Image: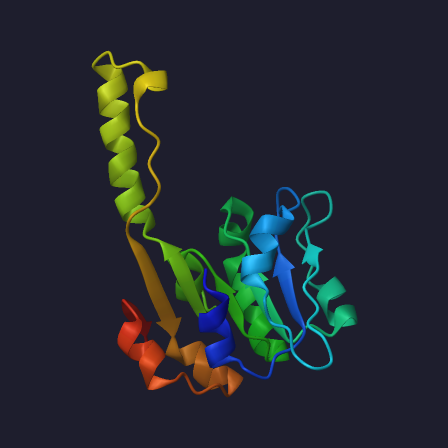
Length: 173
């Protein structure tokens, strides 16, 4: 996920919250996602659902103006609630998996999961044919995609710059 992308689209959002479900994110992962240091200070705390129950009410109290959603299974499951919350409160959301933009978030930038699943099948095949898992190479995703949801942008009153639209792999209209 690129913080530069997010600040290009939402330059006046100083209160950004990183929302993660499973475990606290290490500072090394938070820093690149939140270099939004503006006068008045950026707020980049982490928030996670308590005891597996998804709650967005806490964000109201924090007066969050932008939201970075850490992509995981719980967030994908709750993508409609996240999108509804963001549109009701006019809070732009960015994440790392396209399913969140398809569900109504402003945009996503991250690995193309379909390509990752195809590579996963390759490794399963190798293991089933007798390869030792410890001897297989570790791979990082090599295909990332930028997905922009223009319907959400319009509902939020955000004009997505043409430079972002030209770089987008998919634009949802």
